[in-house]
Image (cartoon, rainbow, N blue to C red; front, side, top):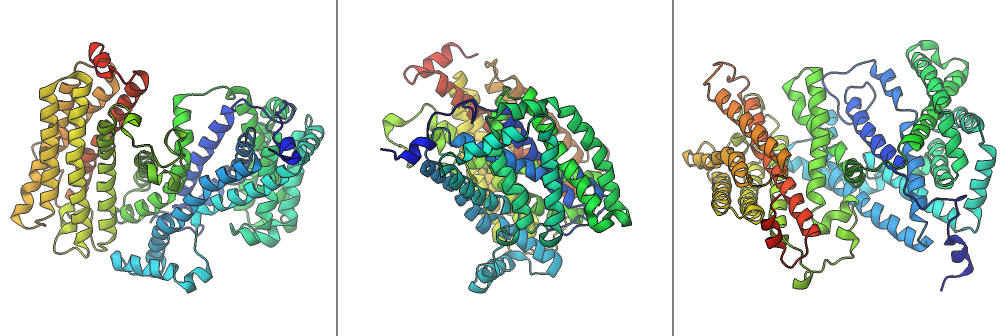
Length: 625
């Protein structure tokens, strides 16, 4: 039985306070803002500001370039996060919302602090303080960070500070929401005082005021207890987003003023850049700079919210649904992936454009690969901010009557998705543990040889990856049989993968340069696997894009084989670059497996959902389209 307070709080929501309809524009904005955040962090690798690691290429103009998003990006994210919390409150009590926030934020924060951030901090210590490398150096770093003295000095959370703030601001906002009628009064006040042009002008005046009054004294620290300017900015944005979700007059005014906002932002941005560039930009105690900064800050936010509300409010899509779930895991993973990528790639001395493109691709694709793996493992989903599978409570029901069609095949394909990720991560860690390893001239097998500092990392990891490849091959074979009843292609595919996995695993028992290491050549049969899959899937007309991908993969592997065997353009592959050719070959050779396994797993999931459990196989075979 709810008390009077909870009855008021949980009363049916009216159009004046909130809306029960999902706002897809806010989802689009959130996803886009996090994508910009990842690009921003890649940009910091080339900036002159202090960051964790830097490229060999740095550019002075990055001081001005980061102003394109720096003033408004995080403020917009906090505003949208506050709006998202408001939607959570529509059908839940304060206690339920608090528990949901705790379950979503605290496990990822603890996991990230212990497992993700230390890798960044250790690499930064190696880069800036010559901290020892190798597994011993990493373990020493962990012991130092999590010793009593290290904990007293504070454990770095790096980019996870945002989660700390979201958790704190959620707690404050829920407390405000618990006060009967308080959020309603705040919303009424905002709706009354932000009519027309005032929705643009009054927030700008507030932002200018706190920039002048607080920023010179507190700055931006990202430390919760002393970050008063940031709280005046971000907490207010969070509560503002929470309060205005259903205030349609505010949203309509932002829509009407969207072009005015764009014009203000377009004028303010170059002036703001000039103020940073010119030595006199801080004249008059920095007040002109604060004014221009505040104008740009809110004008961009109003423009984005106005255009989003007008054009994206009802525009859902499968891409948006996918990215909405993926955003939090991507946020958790991206900075660690980026720092590791910089550390590995920098010694190659690539040109700035090539290095930049490589870092962007590795950061996005590496983070997506991590998401694809972790979302399939029920017991680690909460550590990455994901809900339980099918929103069902744990433990997962494993009774026979609760099993879904193709469950075992899908699990085996999930292993196929994870195997390339494991292999790539093992290689990355093995390279990090071998400080003198030269990616341009040395072969990957040398990571497990006598000259390696920690050969067990490479050998044990690749042994496990080989076993996973064999299991994945069984999954591919069973899946082909389930989809087409083609026994021979299914059996051949399984055998090829089993041999490849066996070759990979056995080769680690005889590290290079032992001649028996060449048992790894059993794995070369996997080059034919894309053609074999095309053969097995010939009867399916609904997997066209997968077939195109398999064909392109086979052609690419054939080209790389011809190049690396010196059959054409002799001298292109030479002792000075053979390592990079091998890396490219290895990436293509293993990564396509994860993509194919992911697509086929989704197809099995679709069939399991669409068809009833009884007679499912018969229905699929009767209509293979």
